[in-house]
Amino acid sequence: MSQVVREQCHGITERRKEKHRCKHVTLKGIYCHQHLKKLTGLAVRKSTVAPRSGMGLWNIGNEIPPGKQIADYSGDRVVSHDPNFGNPYVLQIKKRPPTFIDAAKTNTGYGRWANDRKGNNNADLVYNTRTQKAYLKSKKKIPSKTEITTAYGATYWRHYKKKSVKKAKKSVAKRARI
Image 1 (tube, helix red, strand yellow):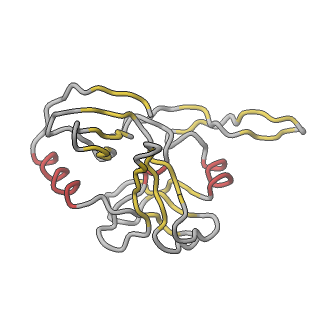
Image 2: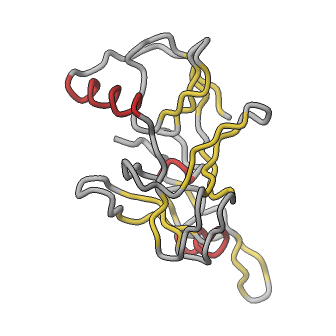
């Protein structure tokens, strides 16, 4: 489903009192699992939301207080007038013209790994129109060793069910990296 890029970790490791770029390879973001844990206190692991939900975003560091920015949601900015445009990693940010953040092909923001528990979610997906950036923000205290979940909304689930029933045609859309 996801077309994420395989790349070298962007973390810096200190060996023999010299700083070197980490040699690990990652598919789930810009950091390997050690640097992600060390720098953000997060991890991408098997989700417990549903049996077939895939990977999820976990808090494995210290407790996250309410109102704290947890992870960015970044990707390609897409303008598409196709009503069938979308995938599980698309966030609509404007209605006119229909503009989206498509995180399916990027390897940067860890917010794309948060799942929807359909009810008791502990984070909100926020889009700041001034900075034009999207991110996950905790809405309540998130203890250590807890999966981070956010609501996708009823529109997402209606659209996703339609797409799973019939295959959508490929759309031509304008893309720009944000």
